[in-house]
Image (cartoon, rainbow, N blue to C red; front, side, top):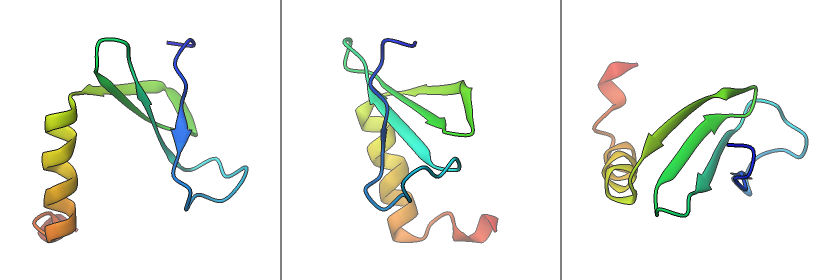
Length: 65
C-alpha cells in the first residue's frame, strides 16, 4: 500500500500525527487510516463512505459518545 497517495484534511495541522488520511485506489476503492497508526487501513467504497459521512453530519452517531 505504499504506492497510494495519502491525503489529510486541509483542516489538519501541518506535521500533526493524529489525523485521518484517505487514499483513492485504482479500482475506485477508498482506503482510510489514522496517521499515527498507518499500518491499520480500512477499505471502503465511495457509497459506504458517503453514508457514514451523511450519518455523522446528521448527528445520527452522537448517541454513541
